Length: 203
Image 1 (cartoon, rainbow, N blue to C red):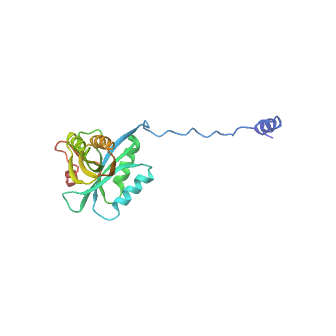
Image 2 (image 1 turned 90 degrees about the vertical axis):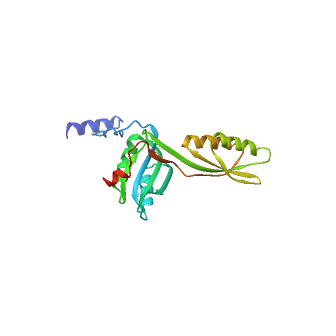
Image 3 (image 1 turned 135 degrees about the vertical axis):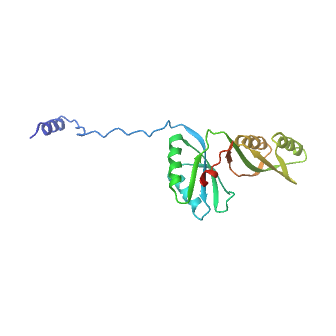
């Protein structure tokens, strides 16, 4: 009997449980700080059926919760633009961006986070209104450069636009009057200056 076998028999006789011959290596931590930041991804895609589903499926597989997703036409009728707002670790978002690029019908992907951009969102907010507070609601709308697009008995519809933070602010103020209905388009973003993600496709 080998010395190691004798040691194991001796350990069992003394009531001790022998440890494994080889301990498992420690789990390697994924790169990145783990801090969650807001990211805005823009994907230029071919305007074909199934593209949106493939993009959403990839995000779901990577366990990302999409904060907002807007799809619109570009100047070219066969090409669409997706703007995806999500929260995630910088390294994880970089990885999913590369995977998006590999999807069929995806032509270009860019993360606009941290870059100088023009960012806007449109919101329609149906607010409970009475004769006594309608004037107050109008003042709130004017303060945020919003406008009333419908006035009815018991409600008004406020159209607000601006950055996500600006829309959040007016929604928070109007919530005290009672919001009957709210719809937001999600963020639309464009880089400042002469650079163009769409022109880059033509080079």
